[in-house]
Image (cartoon, rainbow, N blue to C red; front, side):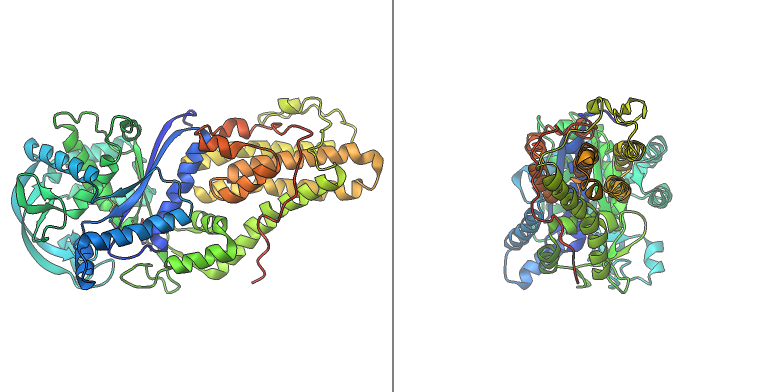
Length: 550
Ligand code: MSP
C-alpha cells in the first residue's frame, strides 16, 4: 500500500457543452470526488480536475440553432456544469474550459512541438464519421452496426478530409509494451483486453479538421485547419497542471475516470501522443498516466444508455429532487456504491434508491448515531464515558493481547473483545478496497463498523443493564466502545457522506473537518482505537438520516 502523503492526481472527462449536464456526468465527477476525498483523508497532496469540452461541432451547431455564438452557448452551459457541481459539493481544485487562454496556449505549444517531431504529417482521410461522438468509426465496427452509430444509433456519415495525422501506428510496440509492464494501466481488466486487441491494429489518427468555421484552436502555422476537438480535449489533463507548482501532480501519474465510450481515446491515442510529446525538446518530464479507469453506463429502465441525445437522462432538476427528498449525502452514497463502476451497466431505479437509503444510511449509521448518543445522554451525563480498560489507547488491530480489560470477570468482556477485534481490522480492509477502487467494498467495510456496534448493543443490552446502578461502569464501557467505533466509522464514511460525518464530528468534538480543509487529513491516526477522550461532551442532535417512509 502506498505511504501516506503521496501526491495524487485524479481527473474526469471534460463534458461537451452542447447541452446541460445530466446524471451520467454527475456520476463520473462524483466517483472522482469520492476518490479525491479518500486521498485527502490519507493526507495525500491531492489534485482533482473536472471541466468542460467546448470546441465540438455539436456545440457550434447548437449555438447556431439558438442564434448565439458558440462561445456564448458554451459560456451558458459551462456555467450549468459549474452550478451542478457546486451544488453537489464537488471538491475539484480547478475547472477546465478548453476555450480558456491557458488551455489554448498550451495546446498550441504541444501541437507545434509535435509538428516538428516528425510524428505528425499531412495526409488525407476517408472514413465513417459518428457526428454525435465526434469520432471516426473503423470499417469493421461500422459494418457491425450497419453503418449506424454504436452509441446513439444515428447513421454514420462518409467523410473525406485533408488533415494532419499523428503516427499512432509507430507507437503500437511501445503501447503494447506499456500495457505489459503496467498490468493495471487500464481497468477493469475486461476492458483492457478489448483495447489491447484494438491497439495491435491501430492506424494513424487525424488530429486536425477543416471547415469548423473558426470554432476551435487553429493548427499552428496552418490557420485553415483546426485542432481536432478530441486532441484538444485530451490535452486538458496536461494543460491545467503544466505550471511550475502543479507539474508534480502530472508526474505522480494521473488517474483518469471515464466511461467505456471514450476508452480508445484515453488508452491508445492519449498515451501515444504523450509518448510522442515526451520525445520533443523540453518535454522529457511528460510521463504517462498511472491509470485509465473505464466504468460502464447508467441506463434507463429499458436498458438504454442515459444520454442527452436519447433524452432519457436525469437532468439537474431531477437530481435536485433526489437531493431535496433524501439529502445530498444519500445521492452521493447511492451513486458511488450502486453505480456502474465495473463492467456491467446499472439501471437507475428509484425503488432501489429508497431501499439503499433506508438500509445503509437510515437504519445503520444514522440510527446507530442516534441510539448511542441518546444512551450517552441518558446514562453517562452526555459525556464520553470512561471505559474500564487498563489502557484504552494501547488497543490496536493486530492482536487482542493488549486489550487489557480490568473487568475480565465481567460477562461482557469477551463480547466486547470480539467486536472490537472485528472493528479494528476494518480500516485496513477499507483502504485496500480503495486502492483497487472497489467503492462498494469500501462502503461495506465502513458500514461493517456500525453493524458490529449494533451487534454489541444487542448482545450486551446497556439499556437493561443501566437499570442496575452497580452496572453503570459496564454500561459506560460498552457505550465508550460504541461511540469510539462510531467515530471511526464516520472517518471511513466521510468520502461517501461528508455532510453527515461532519455534522457528527461536531457533536463528538472532533475537528477533522477543519484539518481536512487545511490539507492535514490523517486517516491512520483518526482510525486508531482510543482517540476519543473520556469526558468529551457528546451532543444528541437531529437524526442524520431520517427513515424514508415512501
Ligand atoms: N468531451 C468528451 C470527453 C473528452 S475527455 C478528454 C465527451 N463528453 S461527454 O459529454 O459525452 O461525456 C462523456 C462522459 O460522461 C462519459 O465518459 C462518462 O464519464 C459520462 N457519462 C455520460 N453518460 C453516461 C451514462 N449514461 N452513464 C455513465 N456515465 C456517463 O465524451
